[in-house]
Image (cartoon, rainbow, N blue to C red):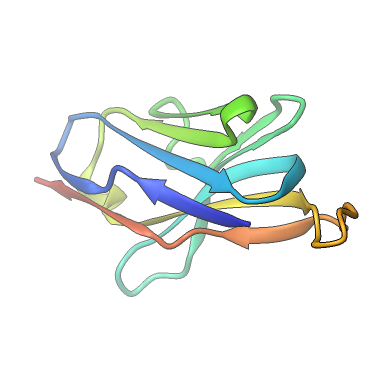
Length: 124
């Protein structure tokens, strides 16, 4: 199972941007998918998370500006980012709790997978 994030880039302050993250491989189901970010010199922090019941969690710093959505049929999660600020500059990582299918076609217990980060730079 692999996660791959797409969409990093440079955007002006006040602008909008969208990230996507696709999971591939032998996947039985998901518990949740989400996004974290790590700004230079700071710890990695939760940005947004969505469960299979569509329950969402957002960091206080992005509430009202960012929206997480998902298409489980495509094994993809999105992060729509509006009203971007320079402090949103960070490497964004997608993560998912996935039940993988092993080589013997058995469903394994849920595991936490991470994609490689994608850099979003917001210029002032």
